[in-house]
Each structure stands twice: as C-alpha cells, then as structure tokens.
Image (cartoon, rainbow, N blue to C red; front, side):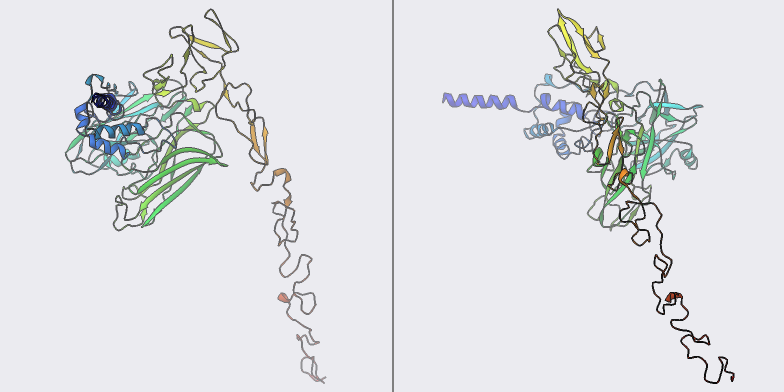
Length: 623
C-alpha cells in the first residue's frame, strides 16, 4: 500500500510540475507574437493583454494558430526570409493546444511574462514632416470594404531624399492596409473632380498609370528604412497619395491618418528605383485554374530592397525567383494568397540580383466555381482592370544599383542588430537580429568577438598571445571599447576565399559569397571575370566557329560552316548553280518554263510546223 501511495504521489507530482500553464508557457508566446496588434487602440478586434482576455478565447486561439491563419504571414519562410516575419514554431503551436486541452490553467501569476514596450507613435523616430488628412473620414457601418485615396500636396520647393515613409493610422481598428504613391498631381486632379474629400478607388490609384509604390502599411509592418548612402527621391512639388483600405465594419467609424516623412541627413549617392512588372493583357479563362508567367531580364547588378506581389480575389499563389544557367536566387513564395493580407516584403539584408539573371514570376488564379471568392457565378473570363472583381498581375520591386558589400547592409532598424546568444559575453537583450558579433570571455575577463565585425564569422584566427593579461596582436588592426572590454578587427576585407574560384582574392579575410566558377567548356577566366567565349550559345566556342553559308539549298553551301554570315548564293530560277537549265526538253538551251516552243520551228516560224504547202510560200501565195 505504501508503494502504491508513493507511486501515486510521484505521478501526481510529475504531472503537476510539468503541466503547461499560462504564466510560464503561454504568456511569452501571446505577448511576443499577438499583443502588438491585439491591445486597446490597435488593429486586432480583441485584446490579449492578460490571462482572462486570452483564456476567454483560448479555443479560437488554438484554431487560428493550428490552421496558420494567425499570426498573419503568408510568405513561405522556408523559401526566403524578410523583416518583420510573424509566425509560431511547431513547439509553440503544440503548447497552445496542450494548454487549451488541459483546461487553460493560469499558473503562478508572479511568473507571467512582461508585455513588451511597443512603440507609442512613430517606430522610426521624430519625423521631419507630418501630413495629416484634412478632416475625419466617415467609414460607414455597412459591413463593406471601403477603398479611398487621399492626396497630400507637399509643396516642397526643392528635391528631398527620404530615409523612411511611415503611416500612422488614425483608427488602427478600421485601417486594414495602406499603399503610398509619389505622383506629379494625377491623383490631385481626380480628387478635385469629386465634391467630397478624397475619392473612391478599389485598386491602385485609378490614374490609368502604373503607380510608384514607395511604402505601405499593414498591421505590425515595420516601415522601410533606406540606410547608408541610399534614399528615395521626393521631387520638388510632388504629391504623396495614400490608398486606404478600411475593413468592413457594422458600425460607423472615423479615421484621420497621417504620413510621417524622414529626410536623409547624409549624402545620397544611390537613389531607390522602382520597377513594376505588369501584364495588362491578362485574361483568365473561366472554369480554369490558370497559371500566368512573366519574365524580366536584369540588365545590371542590382540590390533588391523590397517587393510587393499583388493580385485580387481569385489569386491563389505567387512564386518569384531569379535564375541564370541553373543558379537560382529565391525571392518570394506565397503558396496561399490572401487578398486581405498584402505586404511590402523587405529582405533582412539587401539581396544581390546579378546582371544577366532572369527574374521569373508565376501567379496562379482559380477561376472555377469551387472557389468561394470567385466574384462570378457561373465563372466568366476575367480581364485585367483596377476593380477588385477584375484581376491583376502586378509586381513592383524597389532596388538600387549594386555596390560591393550591399549584402551586409541591414534594411531594418540598426538597433535591432546585436548578439542574441545569452551565453555570450556581449549578449544584448534588445537585439532581434543576430549580427554575428557574439563573443567569448577569456580567463582575464576580456570579451572577444569575431574578427569581422557585423558578419557571421565565428572562427577568425586573431594570432594573439597573452602575457599577464596584456594582449599582443599580430597582422590585425584592432579597435577596442574600454567600457565594454570588446575588441574587434577593423582590417577585415570581404571577397572570395576559394582557391578554385575565378575571382579568388588572396587578401580577403571573409568570404562574401561572391565566388564565381568556370562552368562551361568555352568559358575562360580573365582578371577575376568569367568570359563567355560562346557568344551565340550554340555549344561551339567562338575560336572554333567557321563563317560561311549554312543553307544546304545554296550554291556555296559548306557543311563545315558553323556560323552563317549571310553570304549564301543561289541559282537563278529554272537554272542550276552552273547556269544550266533544270528542264530543257528540246535541248535548245532555253529552259522549258520560259521556252515559247518545245520542239522545232519550221521555215515559216511555226512551232513543230510542216512548212508551206507545195507550190505556195509561207504566206499562201503561189510560187
């Protein structure tokens, strides 16, 4: 009996101490992934700021997290990564389910996680200029989507370069998403033609032109930051137009949103450019799941900054990548498109897209009756147009001309960078992105970080000796921070460190992924550059090419020739290459096709005639 009681006590103790509870297990998940939007005054329709609020909707939270509907992030994180990614790990999703299934116990309230300090106002800083809607806009409580464009006339007398554009919704609960366009007055002209403030526009800005989408807003989105020598041009006198999407509401609401502009202080050497891949001839056939493909040739090395895939209601998926000779650069995959959750996607670091690569873009549309979002029943052919019930293949992306080292330029807030390893001597609890600077302490209490600062190099050989805790460095230029006892090497150089590569750099200390290799039988390497010696891509090296006539029908055809130079010569009609008739029945030297008489002409000039009658001449006169 004693053993049974002991066993029961042990089992009870084990399950008691291992049970998932809100304070220790669930609150960190909810507060760090959900509360930013789900708190008073924000876009989430309910608040998740304490145990009671979360537990009252525990079953719903379990459902939306298991289905992947929440947190909202539709780009495939296994394909490529972007700033501001939202999502839960499999372990976190399982913990939520286990907690709900066990009755949602609270646990010790003293062990509950602390809600993060979310930005109050601007997430970027103090803006240099603020433009606010002239008046409150009434969002009617009719449970309908409301799309409206508002125009801000900047009236700046000179060009400005922007570091960031930030949208501050006046009503977070009502604003679903916002698109920002820099234009030359086209939107203002439309607005002036309508009596009310702003004008209705379901898709884009309804100007008939391709908009230069410069920024945007979705709940939880991090505003774009153009760091270093990069900036977005705002021309003198340009307007800033915003397309507001207000979510359906059962009650009347009001909004008065603002746009914050942040100007560059340092000189801008590279201007952000925007290219939009569109196909206005798009026509999606009825009763088909239709894949549409468009390609774009990259004519110079560029560094990708952002991309915004856009389609409408029957859209199903996006896939975008760059490729050249079998080398693929993943850009973005959205396997399950949701028109209600669109986003400006920014890679964490600039993404190099080299010259000669082709950007491939695939969009899939479901124009069948089985698609509940199909606006037509029965399905109809759907063309391109601005309205939501039509469709679009619209893919703007922003970039700058590539410069060496762009791959190391972080596109988010630099304050997010740091060491995220709690075991490191320079761990930063405020860092979101690990920048590879995590260091280790030696016996003297010094903190050593990787030699190449702000890179992921963790095995540099410092060639350091220690004598009574005095350090002697060899072959490196070292900078130290006396207050933090942190040392790093400032003489590191980036380049290709593979001896087998064409562009091997003997002075590079850190490989930057730029190595290129000879992969074709005609390629050669000259001064670190791969030269393609097969200009026409026919598999025959340029030095082995033989020019001449390649047409077997020509008189001067040469079967050894590999490159036709346009010198082919041909026989005249009805003759062979030697000038002899192909057809000459009567052997008179005149080809049958142009011979007036196939035979002999008699003395009277008659073809195959018998001559004059006896006693008469050719004219019938008596001799």
